[in-house]
Image: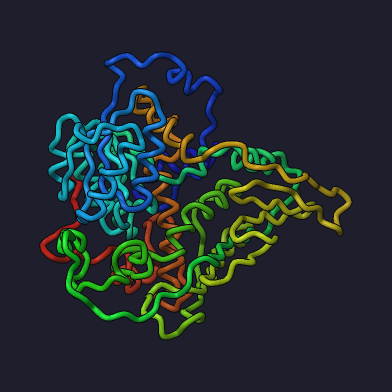
Length: 444
């Protein structure tokens, strides 16, 4: 573990990062058991409230001393809906300001904390703006939509010294930590392979639909932001935006940053030597989605292989679960997912490891928000469950898989330079395209 910590702190660029899950003493959240003084009250504003931004808000409002003061979305229909829902959350809507432009929300001096729940292609710009505005930030995953964006976000946090927590809430969930602790005992023996899978059976490939006029109440130019200008198409809007390269990275980044993160934590690993991937839209080749509905990526490390696999429209998965991580050791295999973990014995081993199913015992998102607010109050950055440095590292790992798929090449990673050895690949994929007058932030 110590070697990986040293590796993280010595890295001048995002060539690697520590995947060490933070461990917290039982009294870390003791502040919440006592009465919150007026000086400890914190005001939150949320940018992007249609999906996870809204879930994040509901979680943070459970923490004592948190007040909602601002909501921002480019869709007035969403804003109207959320404003009406505030009463059921015991929030006085008359005290909540509404915005369509995130910059106006950041100008609000009453806002202490910002939650960023927008599509991926906006995360970098909005996080940097929030850092410059002096806000502490909870940003949804994946933190960046390109490798270069991840580096910019790290630099902004460092320069402005803001608390930045990424929305990888499994890092705050106890049974994930317990599973990693078990791996650390060595009872699985030498682990030569790790398999990670995500089978999204509830989602089907999107059908072809026609472009339409922009819906009333939607600031579409603002939604596009730095992405390429295109006619409005509902497939590229709420939720399903994630299946298009302009805005996101499909399941590889959407779920990959959660599951691959713990694959590396369990293996105490940093970056692979090489990456390859294959797949396509096999469920419905006529679907307009660009990210693959079926994909396998292979990451080669010095002493083990890591395999990622995903499908859309299939739910069976491995080990009878739709998602998970399997650490395959010489004495047993530990299977971990959001509902719990277990160890299945290796029949050929004379040191069989076996653990009956251990179930989930807490709410990861709630614990993650408690951790974030605790650090906002204490300023003890080392206690963050998922700081931007570690979130950026796993976002880059997921991007590596997508880049291998898109290029159709087996790629080698130059650890010292923090880039692929193929400069043509770096030129094409390392940095996301910025359009419409937007520019990638430069942090001096």
